[in-house]
Image 1 (cartoon, each protein chain N blue to C red):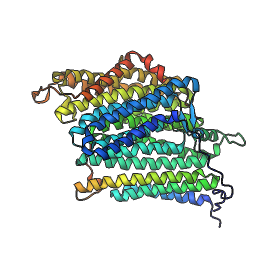
Image 2: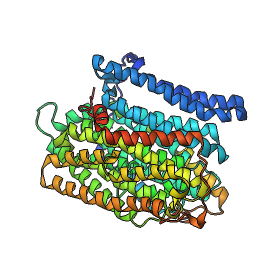
Image 3: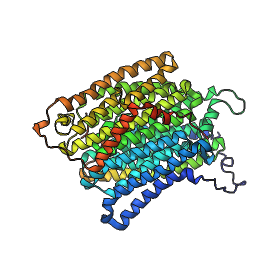
Image 4: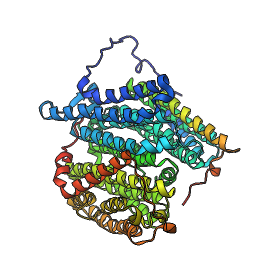
Length: 101
Length: 513
């Protein structure tokens, strides 16, 4: 059986869904970051698969931008978690409930 | 998988440096230069430079206005300037939005000067990050390409996550930052997935080419109805990503928590500049990228606009904190600004002009309201609505200013907001279809609901007693006073001389390049 770019697109849709569901149901901020990374990597896979199908180098080029920006985002996110865990013993998203109304 | 098609190793072409129009790029370059200069000054002079960083950032923004004015002056001769095959375009629309971003950034720096210095927060990093967020917005106004829209979006978002957490030792601020961050990266991941689908459906990343290949098959000229499911999904994902940024319902949950936990100047920045940047991206996508597929984006915009207006206004009615009230009223205002996009395919540049003038007026009156909240909190130390009670008895100037902003936000003539609301209303009703009329009725009903909570703030200021009978006046530092004067004047001018706004905001359809 030949593996076409559709297989990669289906895989990327699955990865994206797993990441999105994980982000919505998990309560540990670190795991939530990992879920976001999973979503971004699903996007990368989908860009590459479409680039291959269309014979267009722009798909691969987009991946570089996504990778660089994702790295910058994680740096900020981890810094936020460190800042919060210095203030309290445990860090789950449910503990962050000072603001409501 | 056959990689030879994607990686044409055999026929590598020489890299041709694209021509760069330095005049057109100079606003961005100046902002970048001042941002780098701020960081450098901090590293070299350490604490001795602290007191000058706010002034340096403000000067940087004012210097950036110079090339924007010269570019606007040249626009009638040269027409839109197009760079990088149409990925980056300087036209009337982008220049107006850049001016709005820079002026509202300047007002936010005026608001921040004393707040940041007195709160013993990190100063030079604050202004450096603020300038890079503004740089992202300025880039956004010219981006006509999926990748540059994405990069501009992240350039303005990532510094904003840090700014929202600036009160590092306060649990509220930490929580505000983390909620904003998680919602923001979730939104950008959704938006990116939509962009990858859009790239797959059209084979292009430049918006004009996306539009051309979405409307018809380039070979046969037939309309591409077969790709509609993928295309619909792509458009929904991209728009949902930006709906988070503009806090449109049902994607508004982060906004009240982030606004009330973040430092107040940052809240003003997020509620005005950052939100307008989201709208600029939506407008560019709708009017350049998806314009041929009104059947896909119009129903989606209708739902977002109606839901935002209704949900925002109804929840705003029972708020007890003025910042949260402003957050929910901002959700409702987002619904107003989205409404013309629901008829954009039929009405065209009238919808565009109404959005641009709403954004200009929205920036002035919302920044002004936050300036008053900031000034009042200097005395009361609180942002509850009760703390505004009897403001007139000890700070009559602030009371008058707040009344002007509240009635302007509610849309009472002759203050700024009425002109904006009327233009939106006429653009929507102009289309004439049943759904457009229903949306027009929703706009009218929601203006009345909004009047109730805006007027109740004004009533507390004028009629109620000050808490504990404490009538010591508020000392307003010069920079905060300047911000108040600027926003009051802008709100009044926009209201009394609507022609002055529409002369600038009456832009034709956005140039795609």
